[in-house]
Amino acid sequence: GYNAVTADMGRYETEAASVDGVAAALPYYLPFWAAGNEQDVLTAKGGFQSITFNGLAKNIMTIGAADDAVTSGSRDPSQATIAYFSSLGPCDDGRIKPDLVANGIDLYSSVATSNTAYDGTYSGTSMATPNALGSASLLVQLYAREFSGQRMRASTLKSLMIHTADDIGNTGPDYTYGWGLINVKAAADLILAHKASLAAPKMIEGSLTNAAKTATHTFTWDGVSPIRATVC
Image (tube, rainbow, N blue to C red; front, side):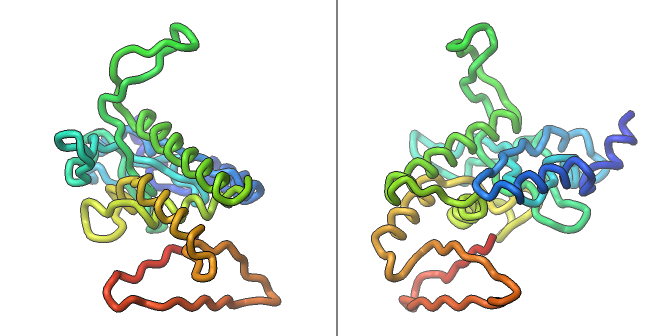
């Protein structure tokens, strides 16, 4: 019943841990998971803490659904209001979820009547998630084109998309929009800026070990632009 489901909302349990185990073992594999459509069910908590099971995994990309960020044909993040049904964080342990939001309202969609059939419009985090995944795939393709077939680690891709998202809702990360609305153009521009300035990299992949417990990276600030760093 309803009570059994609400007990799992926000709880890091065996399904989430299993997905995290797979993601940790496969460093180039980044699952995208729908946050769920339960916000309007959990009215007692104002819709918060309504994500369950796999969507609460740490190493994946959990996607919420928002309105289309468009005004008169141009991008307008202020229009990307969270859908009334899109499940909200936090996790019980305080982690930010969802990670990002994408358009999941009235998407022109494929249907099961044939392998090439499209029909009508559909809404849900299950629409926002493939939208976000398709966008991520384009970024993977761009990076491979620029770097001779190399691929980004899953953690790099996740941090890139978080770093370049448009912050909407409360300032900074929050339990409604996560780190914000995906911005594929900004992410692509960062990849290209990184390629153009390898002596002053914009993206760094590395690891810490027992033998090398710290890593130091220096940069020169222009004195004007905000300083932003995303570690994933």
